[in-house]
Length: 284
Length: 262
Ligand SMILES: Nc1ncnc2c1ncn2[C@@H]1O[C@H](COP(=O)(O)OP(=O)(O)OP(=O)(O)O)[C@@H](O)[C@H]1O
Ligand SMILES: [Mg+2]
Image 1 (cartoon, each protein chain N blue to C red):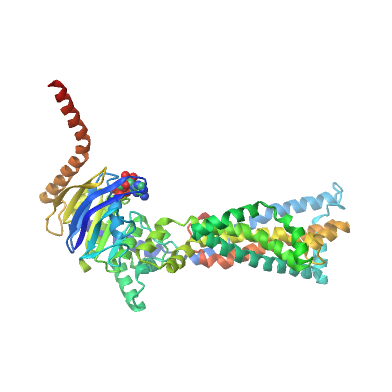
Image 2: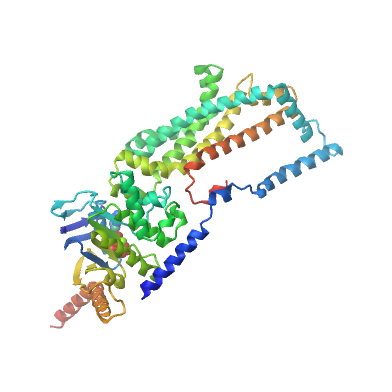
């Protein structure tokens, strides 16, 4: 009796679910106007600053108003100089990031999946991590020269550690319960890694890659301070030496934009891999 | 035929989770393991599933000794344990590696039909309710056609109403291939609804206290008198199993008191 009632309830549940199942993907793709709220604060601050300079309340020489900064940025873009610097910087980050990320993933995976390897590897890497990466600069210059190699090496070192830690930690925190599901179906070690461990660590791996990329941007500035003839870092140093605060701020804005674009690109590229995730992080 | 012979399990920390378990389960028989918390029910299933190793004793399936996970043994855990990155369809197909794509599709779709989730095949596990997830987990174990199916309190987190319909779905799947089923449960009603035999366990160390055959005809009428009687019998056995551990020291003290008196 109760069985019949419940099976009826189920079939109506089914029907409702079928009706209500929305094409979620489309809903998410639609542009959400509220994103624009994020622009409100910087624009208000820029306008206030502009007004302050225009009305003589603040001096625009050392802290140039937004209009001057944008003008400088525009001028640099028009002469093509900006793109030279942007490409130089991006190229260094890309090479350094790829090297650091590959090493971080390989070592992180080794250290996360084998206790013996972790016992051998981890203490040394942790000790190396305690060294401020900038401290390597003199050595890198001696070893690799003052050109691209030493810069890329510094970036790679900076990128390596968060990725190594993130990957190893992600593997260690994989739910034993899911691993057991693989064991019950008698997956080989390789299959287990491919079908359970890999997908399970992907979300944290993406976060590790993102923080690695962020550090890449941090270290490219340090690397370009070491002496570069091009790159956004060079624009910063040059702006300081020539007393051009507008150029410094233009370079900073370029960094902000590039960093944000690179991060969004990484998120976009990895999104299909972590689509299944059920967290609030999705909105970040 | 699933046979457990003198099975014992002592965990690394010295906990005697199981001691000298002897049980044989006929082909197509449904056995319910009942007992208080911590009497080794989960441990027993994990041993049979090959997820843990017994400290002593043997497990045989049709004469063959089991030493690890075996293709003929499937398990449904207390939690659904679905892989969140796979769709419902792919979750059910997870254990179907050796079969052709067409066969896999056929089997999974049939299972989906059976558990009433056909239109959810392409959804993520996270978009299902708890009961639906548990049904998917059961289907995942069934599609590989195991000879022995182990169920560890699969419905304990589910409300009574949904549970009743899950019982029907389970029996529906079971009818098709008639595997041997070992079902752990806290719920006496559930045991009497599903099982051919109830095995009552006792803790510290985990052992079998009593076995009660449940020979009601199927489908079982839960409102009938025979059902009520069976429930009461199992409950009584369960009561005894819980009480004897407390009574023993009591009796011991009585005897000591008596000795003093004399
Ligand atoms: N990995 C472990 N290491 C040490 N002791 C354990 C381990 N797993 C379980 N135990 C102990 O073994 C005993 C039996 O545990 P088990 O999980 O099999 O009980 P259970 O009958 O399934 O209980 P419940 O009904 O609460 O699920 C308990 O005393 C428990 O503390
Ligand atoms: Mg248990």
